[in-house]
Length: 273
Image (cartoon, rainbow, N blue to C red; front, top):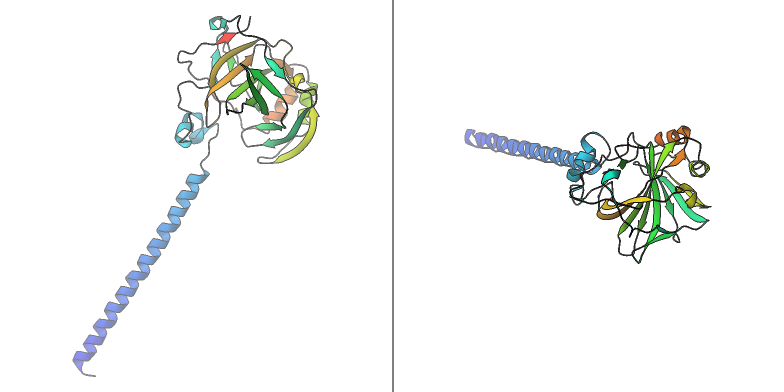
């Protein structure tokens, strides 16, 4: 092999080696970028609303892009009793809860303890049937009455065939132990994400106050997607539960799993006489 041929071979080898080396580096770079994007996407998917920090209520609208959490008519609110309008047109709630309401299951969904019901119990409101779907708890209460926040509230969620919501809010104050609560809590504790089949009858009326006078207004769901147009009925009279019963639920739910009061923005609160 002459000198010219030797030089040509060396140059060709150098070009080939450099090209392969660049290609390998590019492939590794693309692989690293792809992995980083995968991690980034995974982290984005993991981001979920909560009651504190960067995923707390003030960030819900950012996290849940298609929600109504930044809407004008949101819940909960502070109900100022002297500003509520006594409306003679407000009738007693037409509640149809059987003495043997069937609880299907109970679940710790990470935000609250939720009991799901089988079909059959409902409320008639303005000629429409709202079926009871589930009840869940907030500690402390979400709505406040004259600035008072109760230790616990039960939200009883009803849905019509049109997909409209009607929610009863039953405030609970500390006092004597509640037998109905003992029954409900007999299925606890539950770990986050855990569900238990109940398939047992329960007289849900026992968790309602004797005096069923209420405040009424139109607001939203208090958790994402914060759907607006919800008919809220907040009972004036609280039920009584023991501190032990409150604490049993409290241990299983996020600390202070409530949303703060939202502005009225011109809405009127009505009340029964």
